[in-house]
Image 1 (cartoon, rainbow, N blue to C red):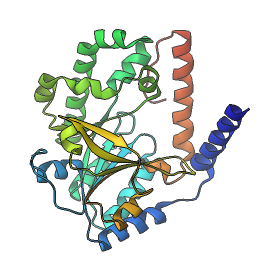
Image 2 (image 1 turned 30 degrees about the vertical axis):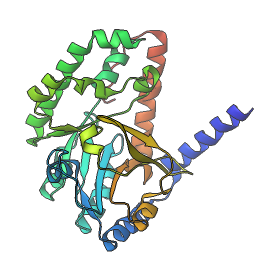
Image 3 (image 1 turned 180 degrees about the vertical axis):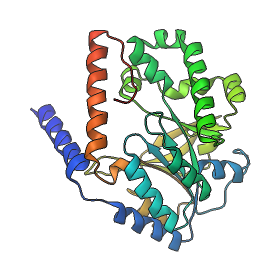
Length: 297
């Protein structure tokens, strides 16, 4: 009974957030203003990578690395960017192949921010070939890596943007196999060939961060973790941080990393319906052992 209740609670929360919820962008603006008033500076991933000398030098105190993953709702991303532009906030926006918007990406880059690639070739291959095990995926990694390389080159050519940092997308297929898309960039030769300077989950990017936050579905709204050294080139993400980025700012934490998904902040019925329909089709196809193609409807 508890499981059923939890499922119903999750479903009702999602329906509210995706289709009925008023915009929460004013709440986000309050946090931006608080951070600026407290002396914090916002950085894109690319800019933060530069000021830390590729992870070799500690950043200035009161730094916030601000990243956005554009999973679903491009209109919400535009609204969020407009808010940040008014406040002269620099950040990173990572676009999937299905959410690429060249005009918006150029606006972001022209304002001093970063627009780059939110990649998911491993998950796409899992769904396309109904792969059931990590071993099957790893056997196909050379092809997956080549597909990543070709996609990145294509979106660079289309947009004219350098895209020297990239960020892994998290898909249900990754969660099912417990294998992230970051596996693609475990190959140093691919990084060199593709001219990828850093991945958004890399150790060298995160090692000076003291708290990492990601927005989440209501009613929690945030998931925060304390970042601690766990050994050579290893980090652990533990509980015990202030509940929200605003509280972390008030506490004066030196370096904070924040991941936002614009669709968590403003309802977008059309975008969410399309994405949920696609996920439903992919899930059914995977269960039935049928190839799935993840392009736009």
